[in-house]
Length: 154
Image (cartoon, rainbow, N blue to C red):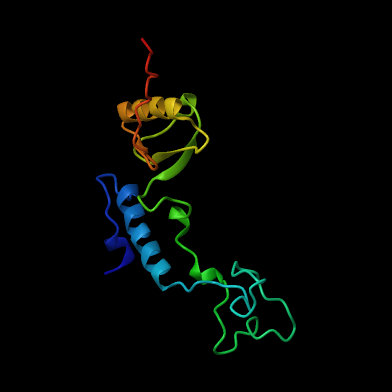
């Protein structure tokens, strides 16, 4: 099956973006499962050297020269498809929201919102209700805790 036969087209002959993105997201998921964990050289030996990736640069470096038995280095071939790079695994483009005005220009078909962690409970509730009315997907919905009213002493 050729690549052109594999892609679904509409009546105009254009490729359906939703189906194409879903297919590419599945490819990205498979690639990530095969991708090694890129760790910094000697991070397993010394506690002071954290495992976060740093490129090996030394002239006699075994990892840089890709010797057998040493961890894999970051290369361009491990990258995900360009058109779905930066997408959330759900297939939406992630938009950070901090107030009600940020929801105004969001496309519910392609974009989803993530409510900033600095937003308080009251404003978070307002954002959640407005987003559900517009049919926008929320990536980090927290259950709204009802604000307890102070008990009046009588």
